[in-house]
Image 1: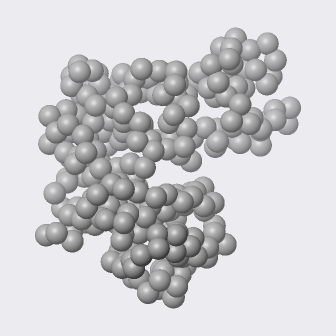
Image 2: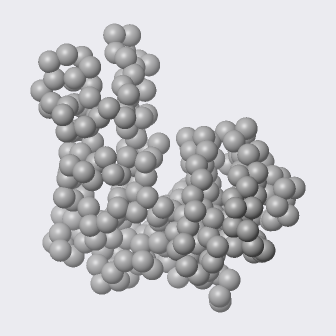
Length: 264
């Protein structure tokens, strides 16, 4: 069994793979804070107990964009599961060239995403990943599999909170209520805010992908577009820009990085 952990700014997502060579995944999500880190080993142990068979946990691999939480997760995995986690960086996957300066600034989740799309999707196409998390992140991967760069925007929740925190007459929007029923031309403050978040982020997604394709000097048929992250399905329901939605893309990338290094 392999434990893969993606530590983001607002969420921690755990993937449990009974066989690290296959994508048979069980996922558990937590808020991103110390208290929830303490409960991760307990949740893993409880899941293993439901399997009713002997399980050997062979490893733990982590992508983290919150360095302040790293020591605590190391402590918890060591104390509770007798595991020493492997943390992903650009040296974890030497097969891929990362066109980023300095490469140490590149988030481990983006490295995992790049690995996943390289090994799971067509090799003769450019790939664009759009990750809808705390930030909305665009990642561009060449036909050869190299990471070319991308764009980073505030995520839906961050944008909504920024508006409500900095404008006294604006209330925070319940993002669960966003849908195609929200008019572009809002007739109230609430409708206008929902319009900006819902249709604005759909237009952002379509527009940036279009500009990336133009900058690459290729056609849409030469590009495979993958959506991931918490709001990917919401956006996908109202645009045809995506070829695939993969909610566990980062965890799949972590699994593949572990497999590639284990099998060398």
